[in-house]
Structures are given as structure tokens and as C-alpha cells.
Amino acid sequence: MAEREFDVIVIGGGPAGEVAAGRLAGGDLAVALVEQHLVGGECSYYACMPSKALLRPGELVAEVDRVPGVRERLDDGPDAEAVLRRRDEVIHDRDDSSQLPWLESRGIELVRGRAEFTGERSVTVGPDDLRARRAVIIATGTAAAVPPIEGLAEARPWTNREATTAERVPGRLLILGGGVVGVELAQAWSSLGSSVTVVEAEPRILVTEEPFASEEVGAGLREGGVDVRTGARAVGASRGEGGQVSLTLEGGDELRVDELLVAVGRRPRSDDLALEVAGAKGGGYLEVDDRLRVAGSEGRLYAIGDVNGRSLLTHMGKYQARIAADDILGKDAAAFADKIGSPRVVFTEPQVAAVGRTLAGAEEAGIRARAVDVQTSANAGASFVGRNAPGTSRIVVDEDRGVIVGATFVGPEIAESLQAATIAVVGEVPMERLAHAVPAFPTRNEIWLNLLEAYGL
Image (cartoon, rainbow, N blue to C red; front, side, top):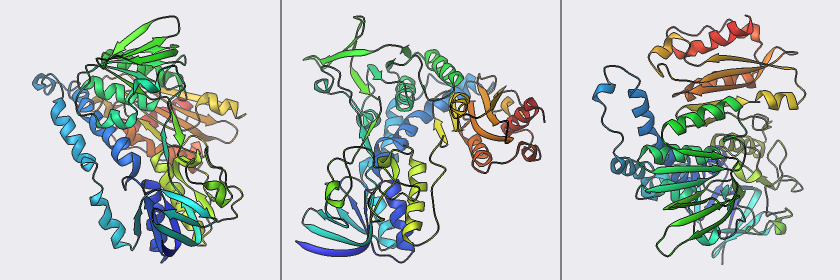
């Protein structure tokens, strides 16, 4: 067995692991990056990137349809085959060779295989025995969770992996779960010609967002032909000899489709690392402090990204990677922006862009909160982008401190409006100061002028 020593071992080559490895290597440390599948991780090949490639054509069609003089030239809709080809280009046909020069240029050693701890700072990867002089970073992410519904696992349902890499448009697609993955993929496959049904057990889709966001996205999905069923609980599933899938709902209704996608949540990839050997507990999300150190490890182990459960978002995993790497490098670093209401976008039609707390979340936290709502399209910029499209924008203000603690924007292509709100929330910019941040005319950023005026400034 080959034995090699590094300053830091990073387990998991997704975005968080890559950022950590790159930052540490930039600090002149010897770094090994362990990856058992594809460098680039879930986001690059099975989640964020392919889903956006599937969503973008339908988003463009919807916007063009709002523009007189252009919509008259519009054909029936996206070319599904061309969209799938472009999706394959985006994910490099699930080939990670284009990622390797970046690692090589920074002197990061890639070790392919599954890691298993053999000590506090040592792991085996196939025939290799690796030891870290300083620390091991766990960045193994999450996998799709399949709930214990009778017959569901045996029905061979799709997870996000199959749903984002499918080679053909399913005639009838049923999606179990009305969270972000569920509604985005409902939007995508419906725009490509699939007959889509979404089944959500909660009273509304996107249950963690503002209620108006749930309503407006639901209306957009239904307008696009998606059958959205809320308050519907699945109790059984099966796949017949012909390949069709049946899902039985509480109350007896049975839905028959060509494919069933399970999108009800994620589970951490922490159960096969032998973490107990390293003095940590596996099988669930790894508890960390604000320096991303695993509880009880005394700085030997760090956990970043989805596997620690703090914020299951790619950009927040990359943020945590910077914090963990800086801590290992001896810098003063601590994470705080990944705790409550990380910036997030739902790429449906309309989009939802949100940061910080919802009104209900602020009130539950004991904040004397005030919500200020305006119509997203009620400005001159919306004459040119998102013309006449429905959508609501809200800021949630902490009245005692006079700062914004949350913001939600709903509307077409509204995601790019989010960073200003993120800066306001994270920077705790006083409302009176925001009144002097003048948005340019005629852009949709004048939504900020509308919100501040509605607040009374």
C-alpha cells in the first residue's frame, strides 16, 4: 500500500471541495483532493448546471412572448432535441477532464476513489494510504432522499440525477415534491413538451418561502400546463411490466405516468466514511462550529457544503470553503452568512429570488418586523423586461434596528436583483442610508425606489 503525506486532505471534489483545495494550495500547502465520481460534483453534472440548461430556453420563450414585434415571429416553443444537446454540452457529457488542468496548475493532487478514515487525519483510498499533517476537510455533499413509501424504491423512480440527464422527454412525468427541485424540473420538462403533475404533501409548494411566492409560482406552473396538487400524500407506488409507474395517493386516487421523479429532500453522504475512527459521528449532517470544524475533532476535521446541513446551496458551500481554508491557514475567519436565509433563487417562470428571513420567520425569531410589498413590474424598467408579468416584491424590515432582515422578489428573470438585497441584509445597511442608493433609470432596479417609498422614505 502506497503511503503519502499532505498538509490537508479534501474529501469531495464538488464546488466546495474545489474552492477549499484551491485556496489552501494558494497558501502554499500540499493538498490532496479525493473524488470517487466526477470532479465538479453534483452541481456541475446533475443539479444546478443541467437544470438551468433545461430551463433557460422556456424562460426565453416566455420573455419573447411578452415583447410585441418579436412574439409574432415566435415558433411553437423550444426544440427539445437541441435543448438536450446543449444540456449535454454544459455538463461536458459527464466527462470531468476539462476540470483537471485547473487542479494541476495549482499543484493539487487528485486521488480517485472512495475515502475511508483510518485515523484522526488519515484515510485510505483504494490502494493508497493518505495522511494529513494539518487537517481533513469533508465535502462529500448530499444524495437524493427516497421516503419510505410502500413500493417506491422498487418502482425505480428518478432522482435529480436521472431527471437532469434524461435522453428523451417523458410523455407523462409525475414529480413527488413541490420544493425547489420539484418545481424547477416541472417547469423545465413541461416547457419541452412533457405532461407534468406535481404532488406536494404540504398545503403549498415552496413552503419555506413567502406565501405569495408559492401562489405566484403555482399560478405560473398551472398556466404552463402543469397539474399542481397540494395537500396530497403518496402512500404507495409500483412499476408495471410495461415500464409505466403508478402512484397511489391517500384517499385512493391513482396516477399513472411514464416516469416518477422523487424530489422530497436530501440526505448527507456521511455514512460510509468510517467517521467514528476519526472521533466523529457519521450517518447524518455533521455538526460544525462557525469555523466549520466538526464537533469534538479539535480542529482535525472540517465539514463544508451540504454535508454539514447549514445551507444546502452551492454558493454557500463555496463560502464555507473559504472560511475553513482561511482557518487552516491561520487567518481570523468565521462563517455567519450561511445560518439564516442564505441568498437563493428558484428558476421558474416567474422566478423567486430571496435572501434572509421571511416575514413569518422574522416574527418567529422575535423581531418586530414590518413587510413592505410592491408589484415587481411597477417601474419603467419592467416595460422592457417582464412586461406586464405578475409578481410581488417584499422587504422585511426590523423596525427596532431600522434594517432589512429579508427580501423576496418574484417575477421574470429577477434573479440578478438579489445581490443588492443580499448586501443590504448582510451589511445591515440602515434604511435611511439605502434611500441614498439611487437606482438607475430606466432599469428594474427602481424596484428599490418603489420599496423605499412604500416604506415611507
